[in-house]
Image (cartoon, rainbow, N blue to C red; front, top):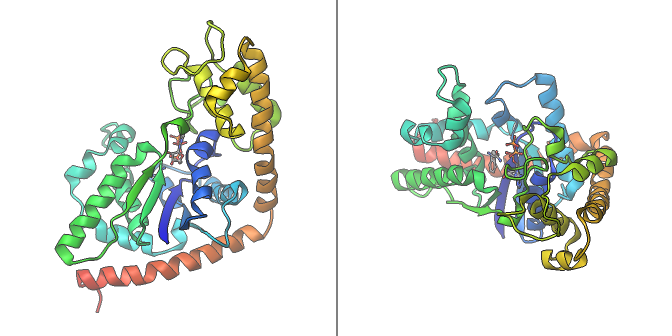
Length: 326
Ligand code: ATP
Ligand code: LTN
């Protein structure tokens, strides 16, 4: 059985882009692999966080993992900072990384904007991510294509260490999400749907109230041509709504186009509201149950224990290869 590892940062509520692009796949992978899903709280402190909010968000993401269908018995769900190996391996890998390759990471360049006061943690972010992955002898890492460069670095580091110190790490592979799973902003459909975008109407969060979902969809940017047709170039708004419709309903886009032939955007949007509200309702319900129950902390504790049991022997192997310890 292949081992899968992925992580989500506990920053704000997840939106349907995160769900359709990432979490839905996390759930599906459980049938064919041994899955480890982490809430990467140490990554989120690469930019300032309010401590109380951070703790709350960590529990929120863990509860969402369960609410979308990740089964804590089959899969491991845990918080990164609860397993010491992440920080330990991070240092060892730091010493095998080059400042040149780290300064070429586009995410770092975008987020630091060349400022003197950019947190050094932003610079080291990809090394900690490599540590997350390599600590579990991971085979497959499901992520969005924005993470491609980080996965390449992880592979480079694994190969570099293996060549220098002898077989130490499994060299992982990224599994990049299909282009259909790139959900765009509702009010600006040429930008991706994002947690950090200012406008609330740009996204639908998994825990939004039906009234907010309705408002965001009914106001979503379309075009003046009319015709429910998939054409990303000329009709990015309607194409994005078609992708969301198709993902939630399981219907092919061609089939949906046919259903709405000769009908206006109003009808289509109204139905999309119903489909989206219905798809999110069970997630929201389950979230509330899990988030408010003592079960959640028990899941995370059990997850951390199981994760640690995999991580400790890997870390011992690493220390042995590097000559660390007594
Ligand atoms: P931000 O919106 O602040 O840039 P984010 O929403 O991208 O953050 P992450 O925690 O970086 O959130 O992403 C979690 C996962 O969701 C990643 O695998 C990412 O590729 C995926 N993802 C994020 N946004 C989208 C989107 N609009 N469509 C599809 N997948 C997405
Ligand atoms: N950088 C990732 C989050 C992340 C991750 C990981 C994903 C941190 N560590 C390990 C996969 C494997 C992001 O922003 N989506």
